[in-house]
Amino acid sequence: DVGDLQGKDYVEDILNKGGLVRIANRRTANANLTDDGTKTLGARYNVNNLQQVWILQKNNKSYTLRNGGTGRFLSSTDNYRSPSTTAKMLYIQYSPNNTGNSSYVNISEKSDFSGTSCLNLNGDGVTLYKWSYQGDPGSDWTISAVDNFTMEEVLEGLLEKSPFKTPEVGKYYRIRNMGYDTYMNEDFGNNTISCEAKSEDKLSQYWTLVSASSGKYHLQNLCTQRYIVRQNGALSKQYKTQTDKPTVGFSLTRNGDETNLLYYIVDNGNVALHCDAQSAVVGWYTDNIPGSTWGFEEVELTDEFIEIGRSGLNAYNELKSKSSVYKSALNRLFKDGACTELTDEIQALSDEALAENADFQLLKL
Image (cartoon, rainbow, N blue to C red; front, side, top):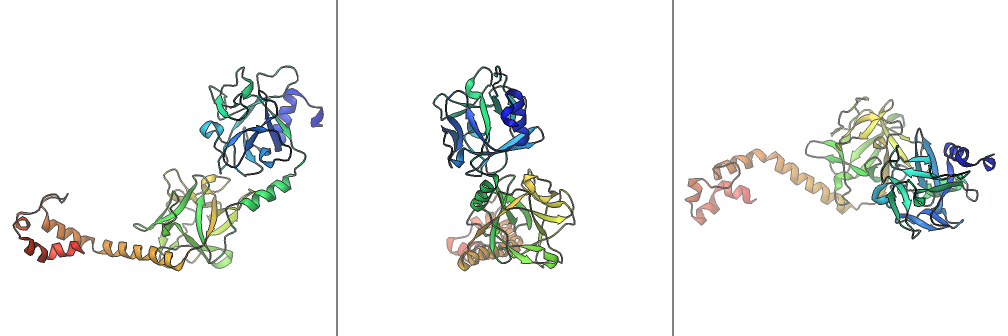
């Protein structure tokens, strides 16, 4: 019975079990760790405030703390004040400051809890800092189980708040990578797939799903209208698109996060689309890897918006097709490749003659 446990035995038990917990500070009475929807801070204890409830989950030797009200994760960013939309691994130890049967813990971004790496609450009971655990009560916290909310209630509430939707054929989506908080994009210069910061006006960041055989899907870019091509499980190879609809599509497999609608876009076996450290979308393993996890943000787009985006692509393709013609014209107009000095023949022309020059007229267009 956890109620009979004290000190280190209590801490080890609750860390191993995980689940719904409250986290209270030692320095300031009744100050609980809270995500108020804007930032993480200390706030006066309120038993009915779901934003003071955290989902504690153990991952080997580290832990994640996800807020039961907002769904965001405790993160060490900005002195632990800026919560993350993606899981951040933290470390929890039985505090060396404990005496007798007390059961305080330290929470740190570092596995050795060194330096000023620990979650610390200022004396005002509100402001968080990174600080040392050594002899500082602001770095000591108690973790206690929650009994007035159930895990089922919390998970259901978070799922309702998810910014993502179950992907469906024919709808329009931005596809967000959960490892880097970036969005899938097609580079129409070379038709490769990469990830980049969100740009709402960029049509190449929008996708639709097209039915494929065996319950699978094709991913079609709304700008180029091209399809991502499977690579049969090849690792670290960047994905590209093609004009024709591929023979075989991708499987969309929901990951194990019950609080969110997140998916692996599976190519073959356990190899799926993955955003790597260079922002290229390549083949890599799934296995709970954030870079291989995607969320589908459903959007409404007007026909006019789509038409404008595609006209921009057409203009680019026309320019690209005539690039050799433009280059030849520039070579006849300028002495140098940087186009800073006109040829002697061009310099000698009058304004009227220059206006009639075929190369000049071509570039004016």
